[in-house]
Image: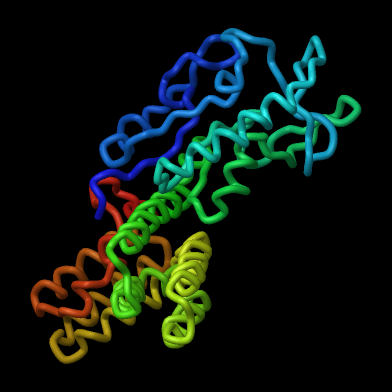
Length: 315
């Protein structure tokens, strides 16, 4: 895997004093925990488009699908100025090899979800910041999240898992890929995809099986789309339980009756939300090593991201 995993981040979340009031919104989890694994590409659209610090507060108004950006008091329309910056910035970001983006929630430029849009003085939370919208439109498969939602353990796990997966995929594309190598990549990601979406995994399998019928560029483009869209679907306890039981099946001849009973009990407790996923996985990984199960050793599902991030430790 590439040594560098780059993600875009709203500058204020890194502690930069770029907000309208001259302050910041430093996020300890991003700079502390994630900073050990990711390098950051900071972006503040409002400063980037030429606005001063401090500055008048702004808000979105009008049609939520195509809102205007206006200053709150002086009513200056900054839409064109911001859109010009966005168009130039997304082109610049194409050269950054980004694997994800963390946006500042509620921001009229950077909010990704449920940003307030005003109409006749009434606010409805159904908009998206102008810069966040430009990034989403230009990089539709890029893992994206808001910093506030990273406090939710399943959302955090899903986002970071997608970031690491996107890095693996980009490294695959950079490795002189062939259909044979795609088969290997697909095989290694089988259980991970099964935990997210058996349906997407089946579609990916059909695509790979017919890979010789397609030009390589088209094959890889379609596979990337299925991979990243499938991973956006959450790995639920039910889907993970199916995968855990599938893994257990590889040891039906090796395990004693007591070991099988213990493993089934641990998986059942995970399924009932009494234990975190890390518990049955740790036991299964022990058996993978003990019985040298080569196929399972190669499954990304067992270690899709660094254990130190503790993403599978929540119930």
